[in-house]
Length: 351
Image (cartoon, rainbow, N blue to C red):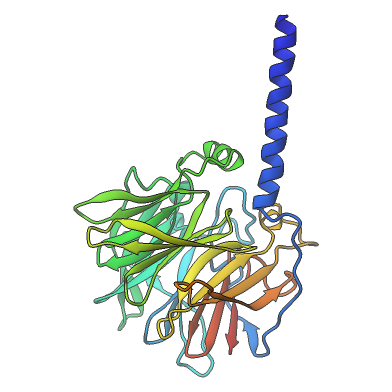
């Protein structure tokens, strides 16, 4: 009888693991292939060879790039090189990406930048950092005359265990996404495999830190509407963009969910139109199981009128990896489009 019970438990466990594996393949869109959609006036940006995971553009056309992300389980073309912040002036006829100098006292050797966001009073740059694969949020002040970054503060908190992205709403205030509940790498894998939906959004200020939205599969990119009333959150493994209303106490209430057939990464807002530009991964399995002969593809979506009953979703760019691998962000300024990637190159296009 004991052996029968043991065999039954083994069978149930194997069936559960098999079901979870198939479910994970579906969440990764493991079978999806795409057809290329090209843009006519594009070129790869010189100096970006190992990823530009996030991009944020100021209203004056200065674009900040976070480059060189390393993450457990992800490929890297420069595993021994620390990350950095690059800047490009999109008002120039031939814009170039230049690395910004960071003030002394900041540990550049452990700099591993992920999501970024800017706040304009002076210009503050918020950077998700993963030194030794931990999670912090770094606040820098951009010094325009010296074209450098002055490190202001490092933020760590128990409610920020696995930060992916931030959106700044004040000089020391932000919303952040945790793509996992756990900080331990092995526990993160289990959390993803068993689809626990424990990822969340946290509000941070010097006086208050709290969870303001939860129940995400893997909360990723986050942004704010031009009128500051709504927060947009990408749930990458659920293929969803969540629209949340921001209240005066900084709590968030979900208004709607837009379902898509792709893994949505970072979200960028066109301030003139309110359109959302999304860097996407058509096939997540290719992203995490890297094969140079069958590389991860890239996809850029433009979402118009997301607050209406029928938003318009347009695929602006798609590539099978022959040009650009693993697109993670798309940002626009004055009919110029920048497309960044998780660990590959970056593309500059004129629309």
